Length: 89
Image (cartoon, rainbow, N blue to C red; front, top):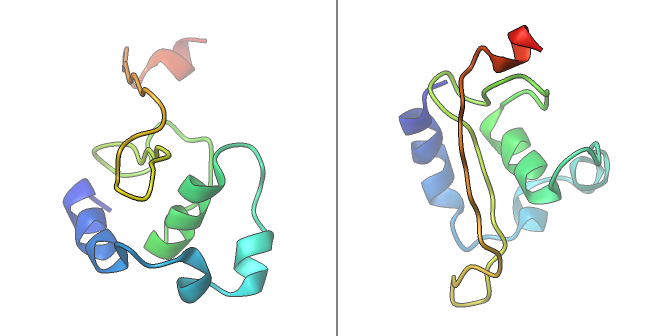
């Protein structure tokens, strides 16, 4: 799936609670290896919850906490060295 396809799927979900969109089992049956919000969005988008290099064919899904007005609560820095770095290590 491409990022633009994911955006089309996410837009209708804005301002909805995960509890409205997912079953209780889906809400509790997630791996704790990364942010819960990101994992729940992956479920809604039909993405596999893996440690692969990219979530989408052409990019990565990232989430960030914000207040009720949408102001970020954390600073986020993203740097991509190369998609080959995992293979080299």
